[in-house]
Amino acid sequence: METCLRSACSLSGAYRGGFAAWAPLIYSFVSVPNAPIPGGEESVASSSTARPPSPPRPVGVVAVALLCGLTVLGIPMGEPRPAARAADTDRRAGDEEAIRATAKAYRDALAKGDTAAVAEMWTANADIVDGLGAVVAASAPAAFGGGPAAGPRPQVTLGPTTLRFVTPDVAIEDGRVDVTPPGAVHPVEGQFSAIWVRQGAAWKLAGLREAERPVVDGPQSIDDLGWMVGDWELVAAGDADPGAPAVRMSVAWDAGRAFLLRDLRLPTMVDDVPAEVLVHQRVGWDPVLKRIRSWTFSTDGAIGEATWTRDGGSWVARGVMSLPDGVQKAATNIYTYDGKDHFTWRTLPDATGAEQSQEPVTWVRTTAGEEQR
Picture 1 (cartoon, helix red, strand yellow):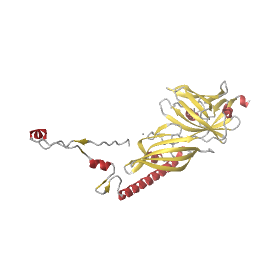
Picture 2 (tube, rainbow, N blue to C red):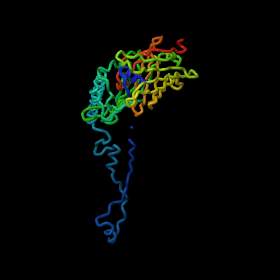
Picture 3 (tube, helix red, strand yellow):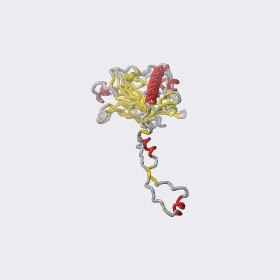
Picture 4 (cartoon, rainbow, N blue to C red):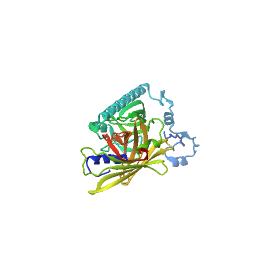
């Protein structure tokens, strides 16, 4: 629903359409008879006295000794010379320093919105899987969109990290990171694994995998969202087209009062003809995850899900929408209720910065629900 709501906010400013991985090494001894003497079998057969056959002799003993790390000519073959070990250690230390320096430059560029510098630090086929499971190709045009003018960005606090080298040219960085959205009280705590590969003289990111654990601010119940019940209308911005249709939302309890049903009517244009996209969302308690969750279905084929947590005086919904073309969009949405008949909604960039921050918009209740009567 939140991806659809972003389109709704665009409509409030101008009426337009669109919705967008050693295998074991097996040794074998092979013994073969002595090779025939010159002349072969015919020479032996013509001799008046045939020599008895010689016992088999092992072939490749030196090679086996080399593989097994035995000492040949006084040289321990199974381990490198001290000078070679020292050189390897120096190279590894230099590579680790280079990776950490590149990682810092990456965070600095991301914080400043320097999208060109960020994109340059990824390989051509790199991808990102965020904490919500959304997959983003790092080469996508919008993967690091926004730039310096995209508005406030989340505050990122990096914890301890470790580096391990899979091969001399591939390393994996694991660590902890806390991300605090603008205006939020609690950070989203998480872990990450970054895949670094050497390309020429540079180290670049080939993949990023994230996992997160939302912070819960005290006990929660679906009843805590009862204030949403009622009919709502999006307050148009000052520069909105006066003739643009209103964006409306209705929220009600289901028959068993287990789920909140949110229905959004989003005006759009199809082939220059006014139309509507209807978005239905169910918000309820997930007994397995023990979280408030939501599931969204749109008449254009988009589906989504999100996890809701309370953060001070606001509710934070982090979710992923899968659009009809298969593209996934992740975002953090913040709802702040004034205790009466208004609430503000704001969307923040996902982990990659793919979506620009949006200024808060206001919804006003036009018809109260039972909780407000």
